[in-house]
Length: 151
Image (cartoon, rainbow, N blue to C red):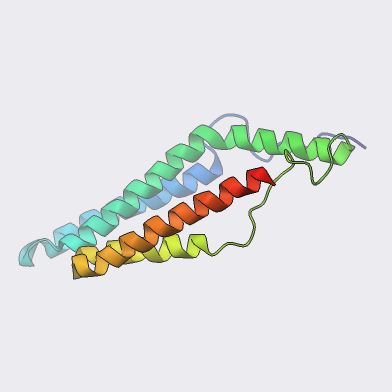
């Protein structure tokens, strides 16, 4: 019963995950250009322009990151899953597939990033708490991830 399943994606080319982020990044670039052109008569509105540019940069970065690493990660996961299924590896072994525990830290990272970027339009008094929440949550998330390795 150890039959090999056909791969979901071809071994070459751009992975689907990357295509999604590249499409989002390209869309954000196009919308940013339209936004700038529409705001020129009254003066460029920098808050929206910078926010859309940041969206484009982050999306394109993650598309590139996934393009470079997703196949290796998928191959590792498939190998571990096959070893668990064959009984060679216990399901609770440290090298078995790990899914993160319930965590509040990603919510804090999102709120902190949102407040920080909103500070571009509202001022430093709005961004300062955002930076504090963002840094605190990122440190907490990293600490929680490191603690998992010690279990």
